[in-house]
Image (cartoon, rainbow, N blue to C red; front, side, top):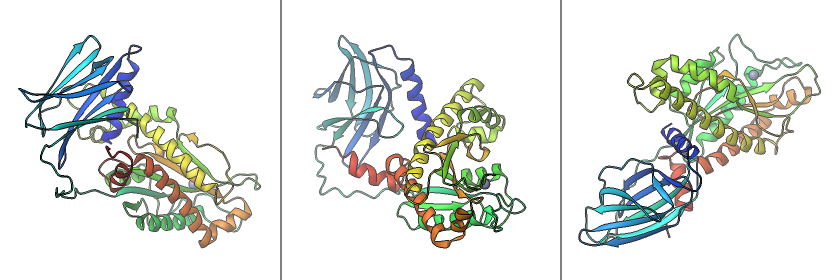
Length: 385
Ligand SMILES: [Zn+2]
C-alpha cells in the first residue's frame, strides 16, 4: 500500500520536470548489519561522483544536472545529517557522518518495480568483516493472495447445458489454486468464500483488505448465447470505473483513512486525499494489467485464449484502490466441450496451475517490500558488487 503511494509521488514530481533537469525526489536511509544504505530516488539516471572528506568526517555526492526536490531524512545509522547545495554543474549532497572511517560505495539502479531510477550509496563500516558479521535474520512475510470464487448461494452464476453451475466449478478451481499457492515457499492464500453462500462484492473486497492481501484474483466461468464461443479471458478494472469508485471510497472515511497507510484524512485536505487515492488506484490498475497479462500467457498453455490482451471493464469486485486485482474467466460454461473440461478435476488442476504460474511470474518482478519473495529477488538482482 505504502509502496504504491510512494511511487505515485514520484510520478507527480517527474511530470512537473523542466526538460533536462534530474530531480532527487526522495532520500531514504536504512541501517544494515555492516553498512548504512542511503537511497536517492531520481527522475532519471544521473552522472555522479562520490568521495570522502575528513575533519569533520563526511561523504560528498556530486550529481550532474540534478536538483533537490526531497526532504532531508533524520539522523540514522552512520548518517548524522544530510545537507545539499547548488553547484555550477548540478547538485552537491553532503552526508555528515556520525562515525569515523566509513567507506562509501555507490551504484545506479534502473527502475525495478513501479519506482524510478535510484542511486544507492552504501556507507560501509570500517571494521566490518562481512564474513564474520552475524546478521540476525529479519522477519519476512509471505505474499498473500486473496482468491475469490465467483457467485455462490442463491447466485449460481452461469449454468451449462448439462446443469453445471459456475459457482461450483469456480469453487473447485479456487480451492485447488489455494492449495497450490500454499505449497509455494513465500506464498499464502485465502478464499473470500469457502462455502456455497452468497457474499456481496464489497464484502469480498473487505475480506481481502482485512487480511492485507497483496493480490486479488476473482475466478469465474463465462457464458454466451452463441454456444461455439470458447476460450479464457482476463480482466482488470477500467480507469473510468476507477474514477467513480474513488469518490465512493472517499465517502467512507474509515476506508479512506486506512488507504493512505494509516494517515488520518480528517486533518488532510480533501483534494489531496482524492489525488492520493486516484494515484494509488492508477498504480494498482497498471500492476493488475501486468499481472493479468502474465496469467493470460500461462492460460494460453492450457486453453484457447478468447482475447489476446487483458480486457478492462467496470467490475466492482476489482475496485480495491490499493490491491492489484484481476478477474479470470477460465472458460465458457456455455460451450459443451469447455463445460465438460470445467467439471474435470484434472483440468481444474491445470487451470489453477496456470493461474499460479502467472501470479508467480508477477511476484518475481513485483514482490512487495518486506516479503520473502522480495528478499529472494533482491538477493539475486541488486547485490552491490
Ligand atoms: Zn461469473
